[in-house]
Amino acid sequence: MKGIIGKKLGMTRIFNERGESVPVTVIEAGPCPVVAVKTEETDGYNAVQIGFGRRKPANVNLPRKGHFEKAGVEPAKVLREIRVKDPSGYEVGGWIKADLFQVGDLVRVTGYSKGKGFQGVVKRWGFRGAPDSHGSRNHREPGSIGQCATPARVWKNRKLPGRTGNERTTVRNLEIVQVDADRNLIAVKGAVPGHRNGYVIVSADE
Amino acid sequence: MIDLVEAVAKEHEKNEFPDFKPGDTVKVHTRVIEGQKERIQIFQGTVLQIRGSGTGKTFTVRKVSGGVGVERIFPYHSPGVTKVEVIRKGRTRRAKLFYLRDRKGKAAQVKEDRR
Image 1: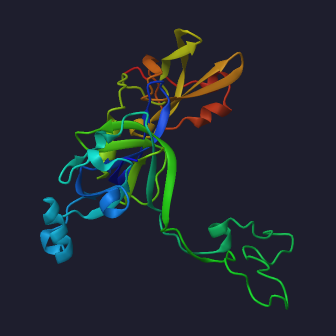
Image 2: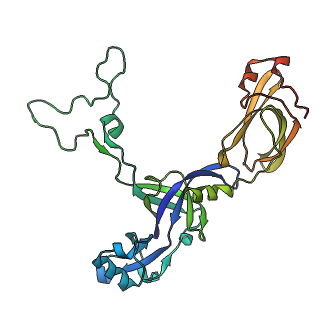
Image 3: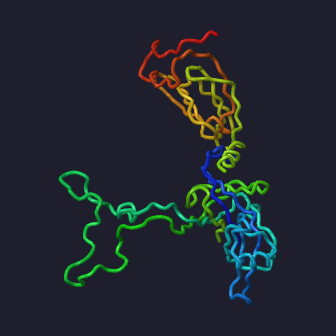
């Protein structure tokens, strides 16, 4: 599976060749230096470790600094591993660019969803809640959360209020609408997890 | 960074039509695909509003056809809209002419701007 690290820039709409208006998310994808190549023999699995963005040399800790120097690339802000079937095509110090994908490819985009804070059970789990009127004095509460003297406790994994969002989310089957390798831009159809300027991984949907 | 988003959209803002405003009477040429054939359909009416910017810009055209009011909303930059002809300039004092919907006959006319 091939992939690239990117930054979500924002959404807009463009017209396709059939004249239809298409909602797209613009992602600044790459260029990503290959920092390490992991193979079945040496690491037990096949992957490429790629970087994205630039980190000030003064802000790189020593273990990381050595790691980047070994690869001969500038310190990157984000380091991610992407599993690949065949790592032989990748070379440490090489670059992955936006032209990794073509218009029409289907990709999955992984990122961290927007944090929603402490949310109740209606927003967090889609509970229906209780009637707003007709004498109802209970509106958005969860209702019963368990039984009685047996088991006399609340079962594990009970859906309750709590911190919502800011979790790793993947959206699959997004179509690539436009690729601009010179400006390192990719436009995918539809929405992508996370806020603007959030980091995402765009990988082939296989 | 948001300007990179706008840059991507900008490439799709292809249409440049002669300047028209709400109140103007226009002929809108649209491409219609029927099976294999493609033809141009013309919609003539009064511009009620122009809204939005960039690729999301649209304009609404109203006409009365057989006693029934018909309104169409055209995406300004859509490749389906090939041409806009200004037939008559209208003089209006507001940007949205929704009040025309409630009027009939002569009251539903927009005064001509003879400048």
